[in-house]
Image (cartoon, rainbow, N blue to C red; front, top):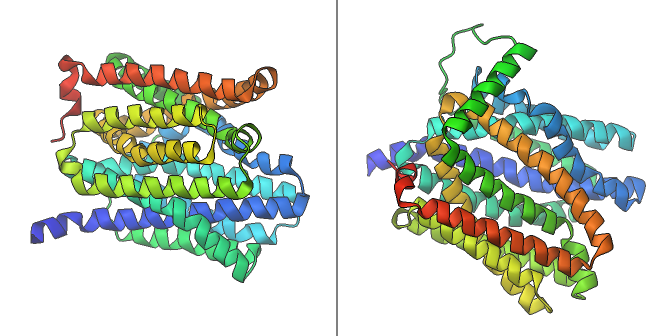
Length: 405
């Protein structure tokens, strides 16, 4: 028992750090949307917040991986947390909307460094034998933050105001950074040995990453197929408010309840996976997750009432954790840590590029054909990809890719 407690000491610290930051992310998300709307009164100005992240990814993901893989991932995570705390703290004191947008750009840059660093550091720190369990608990903290973050933000804004909420919010990122200081260093780079960031290095590293994907085409295929489903879901989610209110005829209160129901479903699913994860294989997590999540979206696409949409949302929320736990564990087990920063950045570059194109395309198509038909087509496309992933994962020759130890 003592060995188990000792082995989980660092993972628990990492989970707490990441959990605090995720709650902070949701508090910030609610607060910044309200602040921008208060300052401008423009729905377009608020919508502009959602394109900053993908646009920044397009400009940074070419080279962030090259920077990350040759430097301490733990230090990069700590610096990005502190940087985000400072930037969030500055937002209430910004005199213009354009300065706030500039701060949001820098926040997105920090996030583009954090995500590949976090994935790599987690893989380095967490032993392969407990990665699946760790990822299931990590999904539970993420689902919990999805519920707690907006609730805390609403309470803080009600008791104080948006500006004070953002100042308090910055403390969450500082606490997350302090917890990371208590974790061990996993990189052993000698001082001043990291290569200078240059166009040649970026080009060489890009070539190395593409070569790895070509030589490990099965891993790349499964993960890119998964990213394709996230792009379909992202495109559907951007039209969610319009679909539920104008097509199905629900109220804003109904929509708020649906979001809460989805979050509760995600928490319950994550809780069950975290308890029974030892008895569920990575393959079963991926297959069950992708098929059932797709069924949830299909029910949503053909829905006609609050109850039918709620059913679809509960299903997709519940099984989203199954899919994320399985696919993240598969990714960590099959991507070498010395290349993970670069490869993760390239995957995210692909995701952001297609995401922007898809959102614009769906917006344009929705003007030409009924929105319900657009959502149905997207959900059917997602089903096709889900079936392809299922066949690929179940291929008997490929079972070695899903070993857990």
